[in-house]
Length: 183
Image (cartoon, rainbow, N blue to C red; front, side):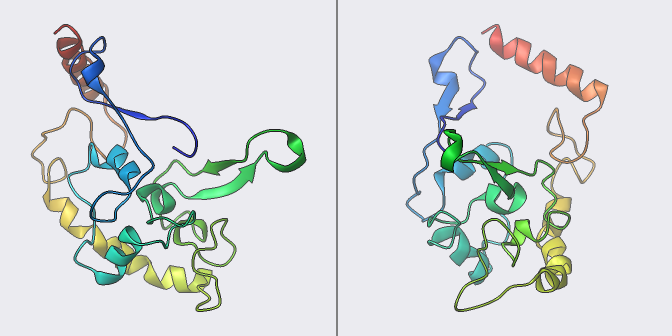
């Protein structure tokens, strides 16, 4: 996102323009980020929408850029910026790609020392220790997901959302894509 155009592939054939939905950097009618569709294209739901604090972060201007907190702000948090200033290059954020909120502290929670510094302001100072105390809660947030496929043993997707896909899963995905592209 962050300056470039990103599209979701909708599996209607690679030569079909209707297969590509370009994402906007705007806000949905419920206040959530339109960029989150990139994640929600595969994930069935947002986590913790019934938690008022989480919902407030996802629907107001708490995000690093003044908009709602996006999925990538925590699950693919930025850990350093490159370019900008006298380099003549655009300012770009380098992001973690492991989706591991607990391992990517303090950046994933916006604690003191993070690039976003979300929780370090005149109202609160959120430290690394504070973030580590929340890890059990963060893990609890996702506990309901383990009852959904493919984690409950009922595989409905060719490629799992977590973990490394097997060779068999890649072959199934390749066959599915080939069928759709042949349409």
